[in-house]
Length: 160
Length: 109
Image (tube, rainbow over the protein chains, first blue to last red):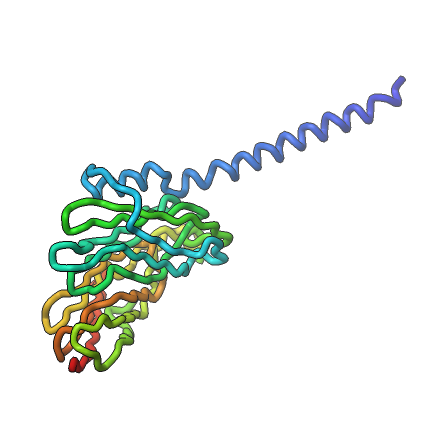
């Protein structure tokens, strides 16, 4: 009769251990959402840029590698389909990241003298996320494009 | 970050009138984001370049605002139309009084 007890105790110990592991796993799942800006922050940043105006999808092409090994230096190219004439050109392009601690990445201002609305730069990405590019046209309309990427090594959060 | 640093401009030295030329501008800068901590747990204050401007014969043709999301040693590649022979001036300005200026000449035929 007594022989049965030790294995049962072991099973309980195991269950307790698994529970602990479960809590640790949950902890690591929740902490990034506290560290990084949430999607609402990005939406808020976009709203500040547009002043609440409606944004249409299209005309803006955002290119970032779909898989990034190191989020510290990611080549980003943004281009807007526009004739760039004196009465029809791109005024500004804003790039906003949903998963960065500070959602705004950069804003670039163009003029008809730019010739094209095409810009390449290198950005930091803190997490796997969607990045938005918002273009403001000379007629006041807003257009947007986006790209999604997977980041294996995050920027911003590493120790020095 | 020191008050100024090395910068580099890559662009054609001559172009046909009306041609679209590509300009690459890079500045040496750490672009400390202000979101990193030292090993002892102290937050490292932000130190970034905030504004980059390019003027063509004293007329501003391009401007960019940088935030923490721009990587170290910021590189910007953009275009402009070659309108006349002259000088392009590039200016970077940022936190803690950082300022850097570079110039490039272009001959337009």
